[in-house]
Image 1 (cartoon, rainbow, N blue to C red):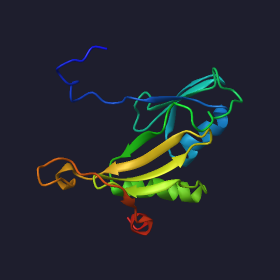
Image 2 (image 1 turned 45 degrees about the horizontal axis):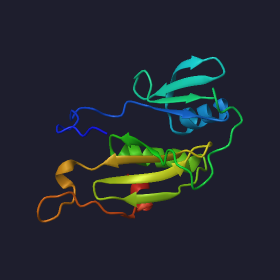
Image 3 (image 1 turned 120 degrees about the horizontal axis):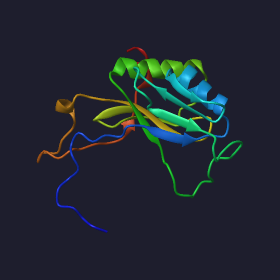
Length: 162
């Protein structure tokens, strides 16, 4: 493997996630009706793209190789989770309300110092992190200036009041 001396361009980011799902309609209902993404393009009964804010797609869903399939068993490699970043704490609170109203269980809720995050699974068992970043000026740092992230329980009562 070749190791390059220069890091990747700092403006590179993750553009979208494309997931294999067992039931397209069930997955659309979750991502559209619970999380609030909009369908931008539908490819018949096998695939759909969804986005926030009019982008072409942030999430792709398909059943090309997975119609009626099962999530991979524990102890196998693959996606741990993907993360959806919200612009503000209030927007994350709105996402939490949507989950609560839809009776979607959380697997965790954490304060990482740099961010606050909710963890859950979609109907196909894919791990999802919903989070917002605190302003970088407030991120915890060690005395020598290095990032000092942590994991503490997130106060959901405080979040829901946002």
